[in-house]
Image 1 (cartoon, rainbow, N blue to C red):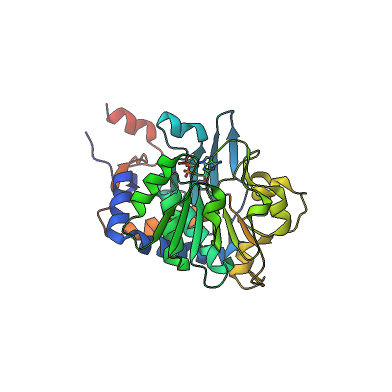
Image 2 (cartoon, rainbow, N blue to C red):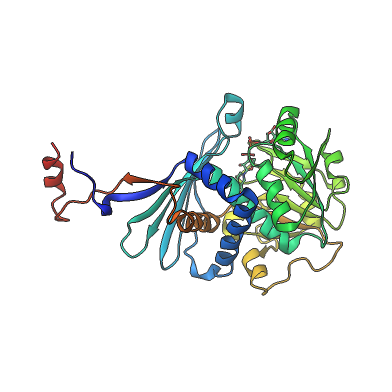
Length: 347
Ligand SMILES: NC(=O)c1ccc[n+]([C@@H]2O[C@H](COP(=O)([O-])OP(=O)(O)OC[C@H]3O[C@@H](n4cnc5c(N)ncnc54)[C@H](O)[C@@H]3O)[C@@H](O)[C@H]2O)c1
């Protein structure tokens, strides 16, 4: 069999290699470095092609494609969201993605993105927390202790300096898992019996539950003034976590309004309800938190530019390492027009 040429090969990061990369780097360093890439890309937001993600909904979940590009690179992520999966032994969210050269369209990287999505979602949340959380915030409530939970907790430790996490999940087994995984990380971790108990004394409240319906993880009376809410789990039409009255008392910060108005908590509000775009806060063009008593809300849905940053980050990180394989992915006939002949010669 003929060996593939260099042009045929695309670096591929498997789940095993992604885990090895995380473990060799250290997860907190990885989250901090990744947040740096995301922040750089938010600060040059106008340079990107932007579109709400392309979503294919079914009764059980959603499959989405998330593309974006700058002048140099094009990236996309394939991602699903199926809340019922977990009970059947599958992940709620799985993903993979591609980074390509705009100049000739050739892929530069194919990578698993299930682990990488958890890292980028947590890095984005904590980066936003850096701009919006009350000064000196040390305690975070974490409601929903599934796949994303520990990543979120460690990102807020590494980037915002929290030292305590108060966990709650309707399933105590999920909380037990998170307690075990976070032991020895330097965080003080407490298991709570209700959402109300979890948010006691917390300056940051993260909701990270999965349910394909309008849920009310936080009711209005649970949320006092002077907190930052990091709402991760409401990210599809008909799938929200916060009571509408909380939104009316909050200053709402979003990634990309055309997508968030379809998918985020603000789908419960009028289509022209004022929101602030985070890239403008990061560029210093708009205020973030301006009052210690303010309720700030990051209505997170996950936007393609965060995945683009993550792809760029991994592409840079694997150079000169062994954390990837070469995949024979692109046909490369000696004469570019002789694709047919190449197939015949391989017989
Ligand atoms: N915004 C983003 O960028 C982004 C990125 C990734 C995932 N998500 C979303 O985050 C959510 C969590 O993802 P995951 O991978 O951790 O899912 P998961 O299924 O692994 O965990 C979800 C957890 O929520 C718990 N839960 C469900 N209803 C609850 C309730 N009423 N109160 C308390 N806990 C409850 C479940 O028991 C489970 O442990 C999903 O909705 C997913 O779509 C958002």
